[in-house]
Length: 108
Picture (cartoon, rainbow, N blue to C red):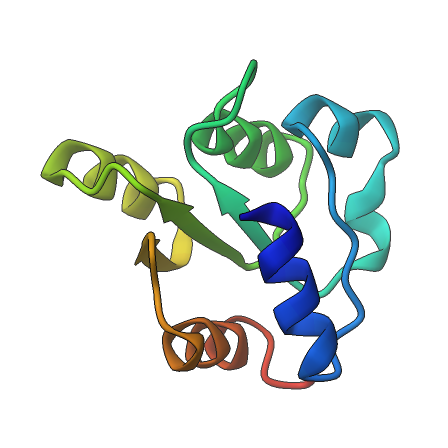
């Protein structure tokens, strides 16, 4: 999924950076040079929602799009309370993803 989304966004002209885990993202302090984040909720190690909470606690206000294969009301509510711009259920269509990116970061 990671490589597929990366290739798709590259094909639409977006500059992308991918990370194997939330921890890898935090280790590189990558938030400084991105316009929005597309985060899977269920990652190995730290969850996407926990990553969002850590970023918020550190003062990072980047717009976040969450994606998940496990779409239930509790997960959706956690994502929304964490401040996501969009919540995408996998598999999702290209137009849903592009619309979410436009909403999250209209300048890119």
